[in-house]
Length: 77
Image 1 (cartoon, one colour):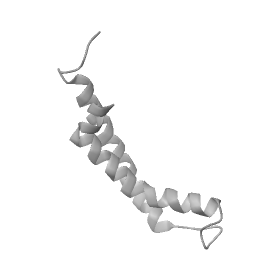
Image 2 (tube, one colour):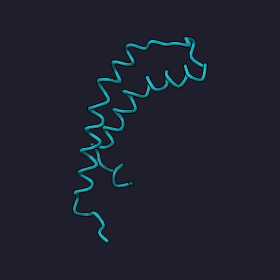
Image 3 (cartoon, helix red, strand yellow):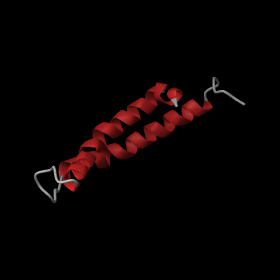
Image 4 (tube, one colour):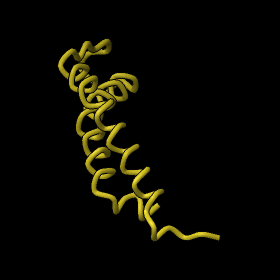
């Protein structure tokens, strides 16, 4: 697992996911537990940010994981 987080492309994808989808997920959770001022929010901007950030982040993380899996320093046995 440490090798996965050492991969640059995986870390970039993870940060894109956190910064792109995190605000929308935070609004959903905060509204669900009653800490958001609007009990039924409609965060259009945050939804668009999440839409445009989700797939690029997933693709970067998958490519990074494949790079780690195919690296020659992988332990066998």
